Amino acid sequence: MRRLAAAAGVAVLATASHAGDLFGVTATDLVRFDSADPSNVTVIGPHGLDLPSDLAYDNAQRRLFGLSYTTGTPAEQFLVEYDLATGAATILHDLGNTGVIGWYEAFDYVDSAGTLVVSRDPNPGGALTRHLLSLSSDDGTTQFLADNGRDNDDAGYDPVNDVLFVIDPNGVGQLTRVDLTSGANADLANVTPNYGGDMAFDRDLGALLYLDAGDNTLYRWDTNAGAAPVTETVLGVVGGDPINGVAWVDTCPADITGEGDLNTNDFFAFLTLYQGADPAADFFADGFINTNDFFAYLAAYQAGCL
Image (tube, rainbow, N blue to C red; front, side, top):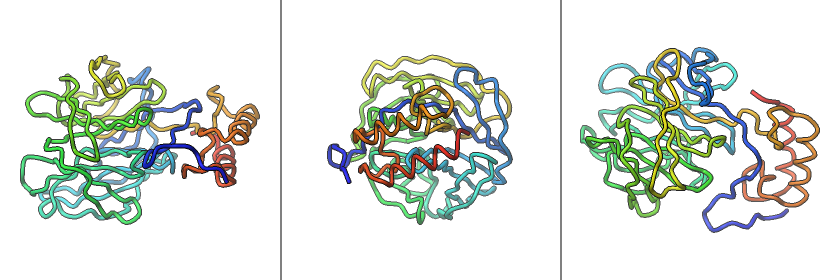
């Protein structure tokens, strides 16, 4: 068993090629599209939820999570998981009533923390969703991480540079880098959208994306590894129904060579990484190189591409 070299508390990030698509959730369906042509949307299938919201993809476990609410005010809110092949959603945990605990916002998966991160208003009915919390997919419990004092409408995590971004819609869209340890903010730029969308980091582009739920406009933000300046580009308008949440999903994780399909080249490329204890061979995502990684890769290889 070989342990990967990494700073304490920081996940080892794989260096293999990625090939993915954006997955979104509408009022009725889970959908799929590409940032290169966002107007071309494929409907995967109905999810069966009342009011679906933000999405977050756990790349290590290859699971797509989301938030959902019941109709009415106050509402019951849930942590859900989507089937990437059918679109069907499964309720994992009841997170509580918004009239009692407040609304959950700013939802994403943070690799280095090894957990889902959400923001919640510390005072139900108040103006801020400033408390950043870890949210366990195992039992739905939360743990306080930081208070950054902002109205965290949405969050996006850059796994390449280990940076968490939030948007504060206080009059203008303020893109901010936040330190999960101290809660300290570093304001980066004013951006065009400011409320009601969802962020996702596209590993193919190496850029942060924002989907405005108001008009389905897809924005690209080149964030300079979490330092100003930030460059904003409009990629287009996503076709079909309004999208409430978006996440980038590695649709072919066993494609080591980045050719877009699976063949023996990928298998032997993985073996080379595995034998050399390359961080990209940590398919089990536990910081070790051992037989767990070999069997995890074999399962992904046999499963094929989405």
